Image 1 (cartoon, helix red, strand yellow):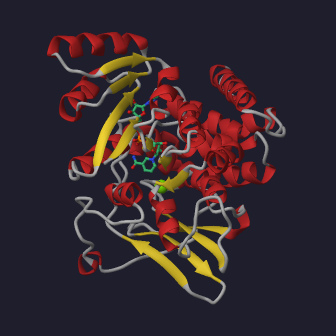
Image 2: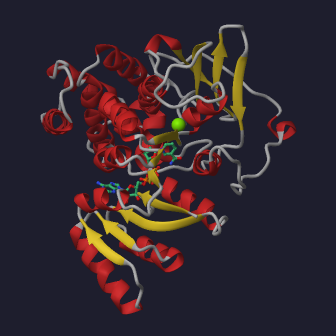
Length: 392
Ligand code: NAD
Ligand code: MG
């Protein structure tokens, strides 16, 4: 029996994780579930999975949840606040931690899980973007097992040579082909992007995801963040990762070898496949995903990304090349820009402009510590907010 803590259990990845767990009650036991403020959904999950602990990051929501748990007579202990997230991921009975909080908020508990030597199932790509070097060092020093959940990185992991471990360079590999759907606006006239609404940006053609990553997919910042994520996970650099637009989202990414071989992983676009892969690794288990029907798909298309339409891709590559604190600034500015866009305070096309301004205002410095990175993150958020209110 493997004890699991799910960080962000009420989100899109969290719900898919619990779906996989529910298919294998003999194999996985839920020890802790955590969420930000959605106490109703978390309460339903407590009723179903009866974990020992529940954490709500928001203390008011935690109080409401604790009341409901008491009234229902559930045995779950309700904890509150971000520190409690770190507490539950380091419990002895927790063997695997699904890191599925969205944004930099997920970094401290994911890092704590890595330091404690857990199997870390990493969906929270922002953690690696903000603190790639620190995170990979924590994995190595803590003796953790890092398994990527992001579908592309999970695909790449599956195509790596036998015995490959995240963070180590793979022998014989000459490059990575990172596929991208191109999002909902791949074929829109450029002028029409000015007036895109949050509803349009969140309507992804192939994947059903949280709102932040949906907007990231529409700007292709998601692929920019994934480019950085790939550099850390596969110990490579930006020049060895090529972004390939593949609108069907069936080929989840590819690995090129020096002998000319190219290996790909294919499947229906359903996150339960990478989740089941990582949770059972190195074994294979049922995920509930329907078998791939190649005749129904009929064709697979590939094209180069349009740099004019998707400036976020360039910004992410530049930030990774600049190194140091630049990716943390990029990520923080993007989180603020996306939220402002969702709140209808910022135009869709202003997202990359805002990020570029914040990056220009905060030249990169060498990374020293988590504390420093969190301070840089806060400062970049303040700068971004200031630029939005001053309407630049
Ligand atoms: P989501 O918005 O659906 O869920 C986010 C979860 O995090 C929720 O449970 C929420 O309560 C929790 N959360 C949010 N802010 C928090 C905070 N400050 N403190 C504690 N908990 C907080 O997001 P999602 O789509 O499930 O994505 C989660 C992560 O996985 C993101 O980093 C995303 O990039 C990555 N990812 C998602 C998908 C997908 O298909 N949804 C695919 C690949 C990678
Ligand atoms: Mg992805």
